[in-house]
Image (cartoon, rainbow, N blue to C red; front, side, top):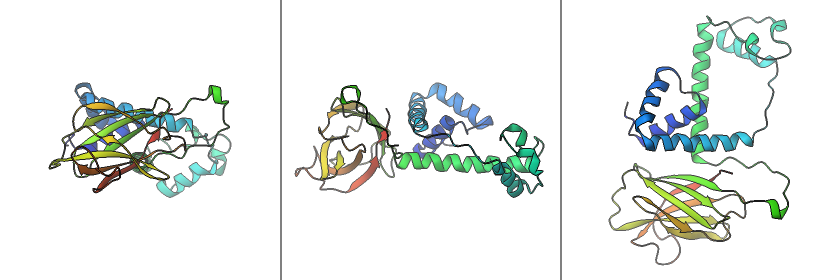
Length: 250
């Protein structure tokens, strides 16, 4: 398995953070983590995003009928209706030697985890409305985003702090041939694109943010390829290669 593929690394890091990476695959991944600081950073990023998402989701108790339906559809097993009335828990699960059920359930869980990780990567979760706190006690949220260049290992991890008016960007991977051009970052405001700055192709740095960013609760970002040093017009002039929504971190 080629662990240098960015998409594979992201998917494994997401499954590891979700807890669905198991067995020999999990042990191999843990050995790789010990010698790969960039991969540990990817796992930490996913853990932070999942933790923030978890705080916005209210627990939902499934109906007692749920395990009956799973058993009937996946294991083709007759169920005593009196065996799963009341609390749904381990006692209502199929026996450990029912290999058909567990093989089906493992495949189902893996598919759900992969789809969940992909959705998290492509879009931010919808914030849950809450009652506003007093202005003096309310702090603005911070945001993070992963900007991945298409057909390249080049990517940036950005951290946005509207309260401090600053953003940091850390470059990773190998930059594609830019032929004297620069990747420029834009905030997609309700009034149109607003320039934030030229992204570094190695290392990292800090950028000043427009003062209005974050006031609407959602931050959408885009990267375009511009002439060296950035757009001469203050608006995107080259192709837009990345468009993502930042994820609320706190």
